[in-house]
Image 1 (spheres, rainbow, N blue to C red):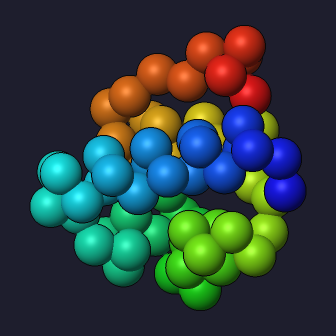
Image 2 (image 1 turned 90 degrees about the vertical axis):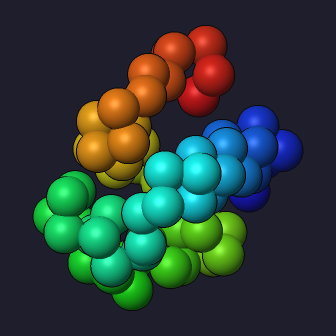
Length: 68
């Protein structure tokens, strides 16, 4: 996993926690399996653009293409 990708995941985790959203809730909002969210946050998988966009939407944040 690239350093940039790891940084994006770290930001997602930070924002999710700041908003008081659990992995289970994020899974519900994004319609992504909770175990997939856990694997993503533990950096065991590289997220697809679609996954990042779903998470960004659920967290009400924007991800710029240059960040990816």
